[in-house]
Image (cartoon, rainbow, N blue to C red; front, side):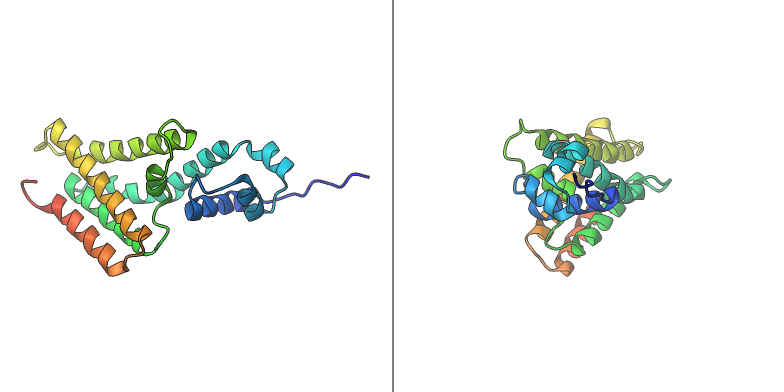
Length: 193
């Protein structure tokens, strides 16, 4: 008599997958790691989730909605666009200071791809493009900025976020990360920038 397939909680499995990818990175995560984290057998894993790339796309989407959107919500207000971006940078600094040495799954994934041709690189690149566009769209509301200046400042904001992530991944102290975030945010708050 064949045994009944083990049932599992989908949300708990996805949370476990987020944790594995966030901790180990895409390249260092194996199907065995994902199975073990969620307590799922190989056949059930493939039948339910598909490939490692499929799982990565799903968890990056989940992470985007649960973590990235929270940060971006700082820019969805009626406040001054530069203040909005400054608020995002400070929020990310606080997030990083609480997630040493893991940093941010999205920002880390964007820098940990082995080849630009891999699926994980394409997924991370797409999300990073969305992040930069949201920052650009916010800055473009500032009538004093040309489109080119808003685009350049959006790229600079992303570089600030990547730098904060690097500090967290390197295990720098929280106060150093927060000070760097404050400095980056201050750049956007300085008149004439």
